[in-house]
Image 1 (cartoon, rainbow, N blue to C red):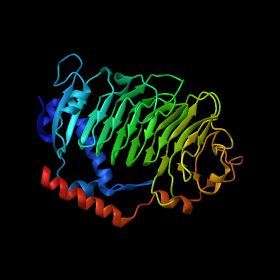
Image 2: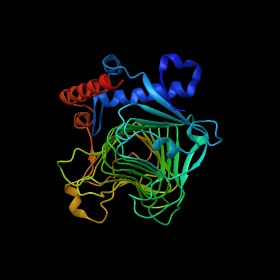
Image 3: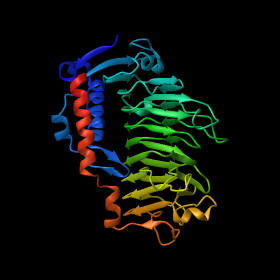
Image 4: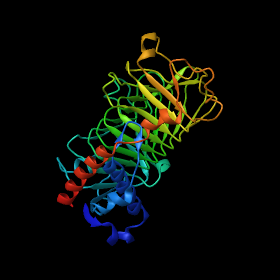
Length: 349
């Protein structure tokens, strides 16, 4: 059965619950102080002092039957519509052959395994990117931890493993695997930390405002694939992908990105790039008109693939001053988001 409990009184429940609490709280603190494109500056102590985040509803998914549910989707379905509490769903080790949707009216869900290599959500479906995902997140304030999510459709078409379309979502220590359009980072503000993301063609795509920190991006492309296909379509959109302290490897050769949208925006900073990266770095998707509208930048990257001497002229080698706007947030926005969360959680916890 589902339980409503406080962290401090459930130390005996083991490390799994401790991890769920601590990292989900960290996620919420990140968004309390605000994320916008390329910006992350967290003050956890100040944020935590302003709210009580210690109480949550707990449930366990175990395929052996030794839990509250045997299927992940059943646990999600049990969360009330228009939920305003924190729900923590602990997924025990196993292989879950499910196509999962977190509906838009079910925010504040944490879905957590204990280790990504033994907690696997798998499906096999190709077709349109908005329909084929193994895991679709439409709700806001979602956390995914220590999960492998894969689409095993293969190399013959679009096959999304994870689609994220809700605002304020975060993934920690996850493995996200497919071939084409692996991660549809569709819309909203998102954070990926220590995730392994694998694919060949446009395998991180969409129009979210997302920060990828210490993630490993692995290209399966044997020639001229693309790591990113960012879909920003207007200069007024505050969207784009920032990769900070990441690692890019692969088996063949790949571009860092190509413009799905006319105003596509991607930054790689302090990232290791193996020789898999093609010297020119970026592809224009056979449309030279986008040279003047896209924004592709690199800052203090290193490794054999980070040599910018042969990069396309329409990409940017960023100085510290030029890179600063992508990593420094506005004080007013941070305070506004913090105030909103403080009021919300004081009412609901």
